Image 1 (spheres, rainbow, N blue to C red):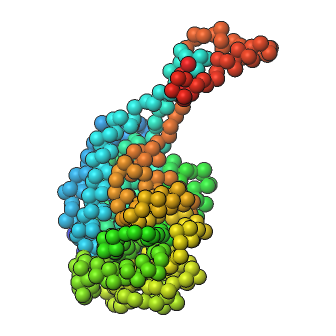
Image 2: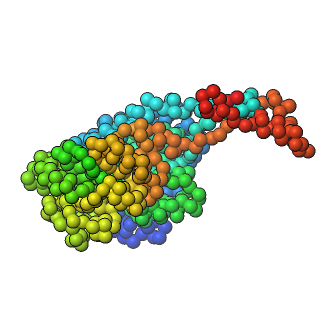
Image 3: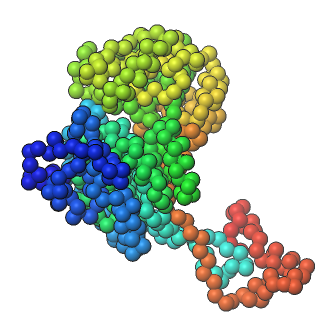
Length: 532
């Protein structure tokens, strides 16, 4: 955030009073001098203050005014030219490159995120998506011409991709930079204006985004709005042309209800219990390393992390010592002292995970240690977990890995299919028939064999859920398409009226026959239906 005006004086933290209902966002009133410089800025102006242990947000400019300002910019069509889109995308890339140290510091404050993990999952993943989009954008915006029949032979028939308008992007706390910037790439590429709502839980990153976005992007077209649940509820009362939300299924239902008021289209990036089926012949040591890395990356706080393992008893017994070996090689014997292992984001999330561990009937075979003051939970593996166990009733979203046993491949597939469709599904096996069987007989947002998480790093692949794990997708061209309207266009002149007149009343049976012949799709020599 921009710093307070120095003239505000040293007594700022003591200036507290009850705001009127119209001004209510917290119980703090800023002195006028403290906000003089802020009001002149052309974006949503927010000043954070720590008062009575509570992070407060003061809104200096009403949400409606901000949204109307963005809508006016969109109506001026300033976001439509390809040059503008490229310039904004390049500015976003500069934001990442110029401020890497600040970004890493913020992510470390919020999640104790190791530099290596922060770079590959927050900075480089987004930067690669940006470069990919910048390189391909000119081809994506081209008109797509479609096949014609005899009745439309002289017409120009094409699909034109157009921006939607003013979109809302609501991010999540576990990857607080990536989950705002990655969807923003698609919104900019498609020519939209955007309101960004970072997660208030990752406060340092939220604050940094609210500082950097206005410095690098057009303040007429993009705005950052901070705040908690109440501010988000107010925000959702406004009309948007698309809402992109990343987070929980519970909140997603509220998002859909709010969007229904204006019939606003919604993209939901959710989660669920991502299974990892291990079956048949495998490289046990390599499998354990890849499983441990994918599961405990970001301290298990990833929507695509393996949530539980399904395997035979024999494979389980072979895996456990290899998992223990992998954990020690990654983090050392004293994991709590490792600079490469993250922390749980808040005390509330830590308490939830510890309660799950306490209630589970499974047997802890490694891990289980915790330090509340440090929000630390050791990588924990449990066996003898049943499908009715508390760990199997909700997405774990933390460094806890239950291992369940199955007797056959069919049982494993059936187990996964009896549950909601996950955001990602993993299978570890050297046997292609096993991999293909799981691929063909299950459904999930994404699929990866013999590894975890890495499928989402490729911008050429769509990233998104299906069923309860979400709707819609993004990354690369898929983000561009999500934030575009595909407009069906036909440019017609006055030719072929002899054919066109066959449709006019009074209707005749003979004319119907000619029209059916002129408008039908016909199979060509390649076995497909296309232009006559």
